[in-house]
Length: 295
Image (cartoon, rainbow, N blue to C red; front, side, top):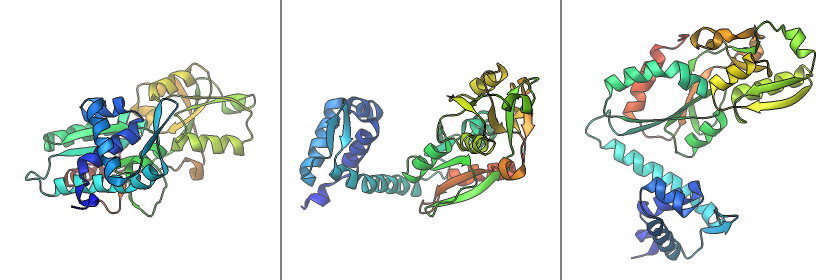
């Protein structure tokens, strides 16, 4: 039997876990096994390939050039194995659905939709991951997420995109602060971490306005952004629908922006080559039914 015939998905699954976690211990936690098992599978894979796949650097395992070349194929094979499993499930609405969403979307727009989805498909194991648009896009492209809701507009040859909600962005400031007053002096920009679509627009807008930016504060929580702006720490840029849909929306001033800057539709993105996922298709039906809603 040739070496390539002995390659099995389990070996590649362990390789992928190590590449994502950077250590045998963390990979073992993710795979629900012991580190010695992960180490043994790695040695087996390296032996079959005749190449080292990782090298240790600063307490982490980094991919070697050979590991870098193997990575995209391992991700593709892992994705195909999952799709093959889904394709023969007896219950169409079963298995796992891995969805990504921006914090603003996950906190306000999605809960009601996901509640309806759960009533319709109670056997589906839903995994919701929040993050910035750029991080979510990377996870969809790598096959770690089945789909994600991101800030647009955006196009990529490997992705299918669909507009789910029209969004209008607005400037947020502390209550009682006039924009001219706030922007005439040095400002602090407040928003989500780097890679956030809304924060990137705020950066471009501040450059166009020639603002004197003295600091940048980034938070992974929508509540923290609202609280910081309300406390007068700086200015931010958020979807206008949050003014009435979020409990803290009334704690800040909202300054509407020109359409060319404010227009930022929420898109659902998924891979072009993905096998049809029945549970995802049903979730899409629910999202489309709420298209244009401000809730």
